[in-house]
Image (cartoon, rainbow, N blue to C red; front, side, top):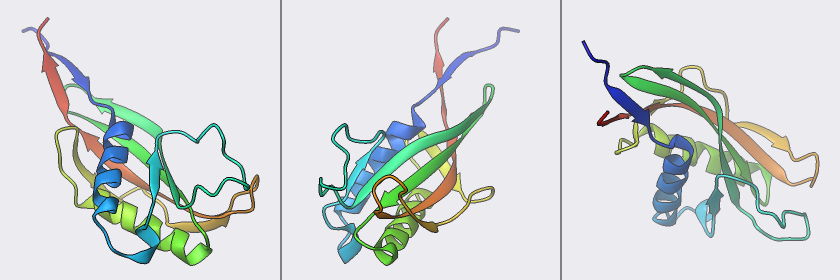
Amino acid sequence: MVRPLVVFGDAQAAAAGVLRTKLAARDEPYTSSVEVAGRMPADRSPEQDRLPFVLVAVDDDRPTYPVSSLVILRLTVWHHDTDQAFDLAQMCRGLLLVHSGPVIRSCRVAAGVGPIRSVDQDTGIDLATTTVEAYVRPTRLET
């Protein structure tokens, strides 16, 4: 029996894309002008008003060959105040929990945390963080 060659899509990029699209369509005040990225901007500083900002990062990736890959996504949200950071983190988590697409099959909170409020130690800006488990679809390739 030949084992299939499979690869798993980029859950970080897929989640960031989902959040960019879905948040742009929302009308809650805390979602206005949100920027979503997979890495921090090079010009990040308290003097640069880049709020609200959502950072999507991968904390862990556990493939279960050849069926799925379980990726822990961390969503860190910087906002103008603690309440808006918390609300936007909840919205981001909720949007991913109801998403199913070509890369991310589904998400859940099972081992997740948050949203948890905090303050960025480097900038003093209010933030909230939360995690979700994303199940990533395999893509079969020819050998």
